[in-house]
Amino acid sequence: MSEPLIRVSGLKKYFNTPSGFLHAVEDVSFSLDPQKTLGVVGESGCGKSTLGRAILRLQEPTAGEVWFEGENILSYDAARLKQLRCRMQIIFQDPFASLNPRMSVFETIAEPLLIQGVFSKKDRTGLTRAVREMMDQVGLAERLINSYPHELDGGRRQRIGVARALVLNPRFLVCDEPVSALDVSIQAQILNLMQELQQQLGLTYLFITHDLSVVKHISDDIMVMYLGQVVEKAPAERIFENPLHPYTQALLSAIPIPDPDYKQERVLLKGEVTSPINPEPGCRFAKRCPQVTTACLKANLPLIEVEDNHYVACTLFGSAGAQHHAVRG
Amino acid sequence: MKMHMNHLPQTQTRKQRSLWQDAWRRFKKNKLAVISALFILLLSLIAISTIVIDLTTGNSFYRQYVIKQNLRGKLDAPSAAHLFGQDEFGRDVLLRMIWGVRYSLFMGILAIVFSTLVGGFIGAISGYYAKLDNVLMRFMDILLAIPSMLLATAIVAALGPGLVNVLVAIGIAYIPTFARTLRASVLTVKEQEYIEAARAVGADDFRIITKYILPNAMAPLIVQSTLGVAGALLSIAGLSFLGLGIQPPTPEWGSMLSNARTYIRDAWHITVIPGLGIMLTILALNLVGDGLRDALDPKLKS
Image (cartoon, rainbow over all chains, first blue to last red; front, side, top):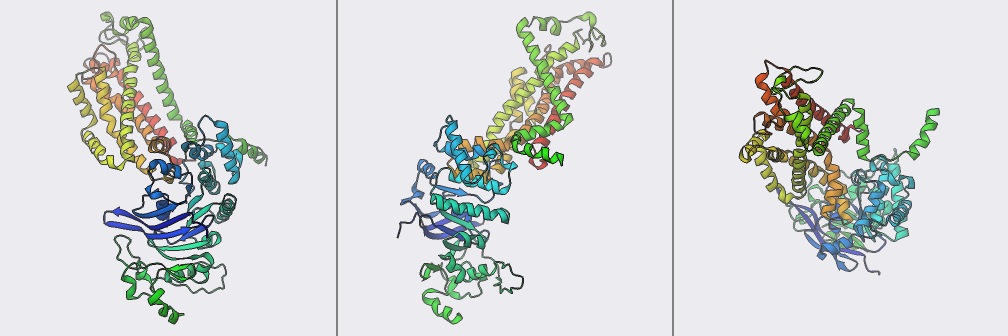
């Protein structure tokens, strides 16, 4: 077994709000092998974007550890953090908001190289060559080099975003819903581009999305989050074949199926969403869970390996829950 | 069909426009604003040429024709020799108006440049660093609580009348407006994703502020500055009118107006002309400001 490229353990991110601490990311742990893709899914506000930003230290985590290439990057000082930026990058959701409108394509892609000192400002030819190569790699026509973002469509802008992230030659990329702001036809283009780049450059992705069909397409493993907690983690096909957590089941039943005659049995969730501000211990899905028991609210539930590599945090499984599951099945 | 064929190659070779170039293109469409801008430019050229004349002649022209009294022509109405007539001491009003541009317009611009720089700095810092925000903004609130004209009057009264003191007084009085303006737009721009993207590639605070935040937050400040020059010009004229600003015989428009007031029944021209000068300049500055606002507003992008 190879050494994981990145290992996150016990990562927490709390935001201080006037009414208390908002537990955006609660005790998340996972490890990710090189050249693999971990898909993170969950509804809006479940902390998946915060998780991605906390791993990159764009938002300082409240507690936990992030081991990257064998070092805990949370102990890095500012200078080492800046160096780390060459190896870990992020692609943002909205290509309209994530590009500086006052900078041309060239300036945007050259910016990381200048900041990290890969090229000096005087080395115009070297810089131009690097930018052109990068543009070619992400499928941007060379004539667009002096264009400004407002002159381009969403797909091209997102290619600029990908180019900016890749120009420093990182090993690990956080992809924060990189296609959800794009048209469906362009989504596929960008996803294919990202998969090609992953194979060519040996990239490792943390792929954050709320779109289950996208995550199925691209991920090796899938991690399902609900209000900051990981409720289930398994290889992609396993999640879709045999979802164990009631929330995952509800989530998967919400995928539209392109067949008008198909009568789908949806799991409809009732009840209110638990507030993430100073939450009670226990499963945060309990208030909406169709199979809730008193055991759910006793304490935060650990992830239990139910099958090989298939983890779930639910009282239905593990020591106490196994029988319950058998009865239901 | 023919149009289409001509159109296609053009889009491919078209020069790419930045947002500033786009704004300039929109500004040019606004005829009134362009005329006003040309008027301001003309005034600036006049002011510069008077400064050049003074420097080359060692103020002798200035002393001879702008300051020197000629009581024989006292309050003479406009004529071919003196287009705008002569004032209460027989000096040529046109020449005095021309020499006065630098005090009105240039002092206004200078005061606003000063307060834009200081106010902009304070605004950028307090918008970007949340920790300093409260302290700096409360200090600005103290300044804002006093009406700017009253504050300027108080500063001049304390420091004594004179060119530099008026400049300082008006400069200080306008600082909070600019600080507030820039702070507000910095707060908006700071939350944009491209700021986070810059941080993700390792940009430091200085680079983020100068290359990412300021270029995107400048537009309201530019508009405010243009309008501010008009306000400052009026303040300078007002202070001079009250006798607190630039002192006679220096041909400042406000003080010309103030001195002429006594003779308003005998000679209309020496009050109307400086008054018109102030009014037209302020109108032009406001029109340019309006034009800039329309041109720089991203929501009106065509």
